[in-house]
Length: 278
Image (tube, rainbow, N blue to C red; front, side):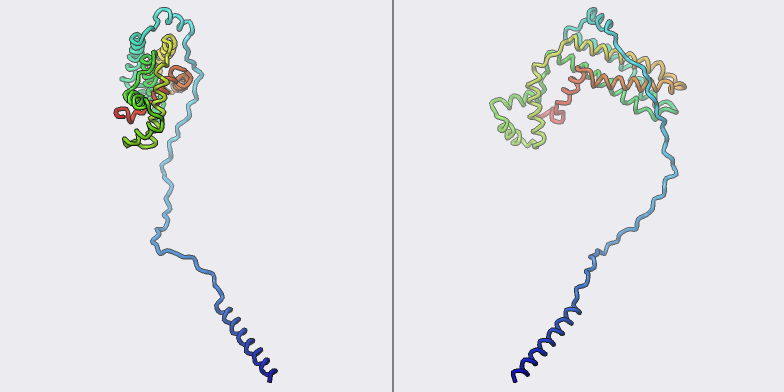
């Protein structure tokens, strides 16, 4: 009796195992298909190549032309026409600016090059040269006006007044209370420190005069190019290598002359977008 019971239990468990294995095989996990979205995706359209060929602008090689101011000429000018004050300094700048304006009111280098048939594609070179002279004249004005120290702007005066008796944190809170953005406050803080340092910044007029003589030389060459080589439209190809050398010399002077570097740097320190408010 006991043997029959054990045999029955074995058969019963075996049958259940067979059923279980069959069920597992039938319910085997199949790889899931990737989800997709029903969207109207436009088919890519092949764009045909343009039949218009890009204009090939030949490269111009810069000439070896040099631009210098002789030391003897500098010494002579310092001796015969010394600049001693702000008024006299600005009068000398007036002379240079007058000659610069004669060229630019007649079209400048840009106008000369743009008006030619074969070289108008090089007119951006003329734009850069014209703009550089405007920057240099501005720099000379700034140097003449600030030789004895920088004049404080309205913004600087207000910032210095508000900073008195306040820590940096307190000044920041005050500016925040007026609605100033964090990024703008950082500009104000740097500007007020710059203004305090610059009140006693002094420049020798003789040093400014040397810089002025260099700019005067460049303006003289500017006029000669304009009324000479660039005026002959039929032979402008012969002038362009010298024009490139002239442009290169102007740019090097702007980044190497210490006084012009000071003028440009100080100009950039003013937060012009807030110059009328504080």
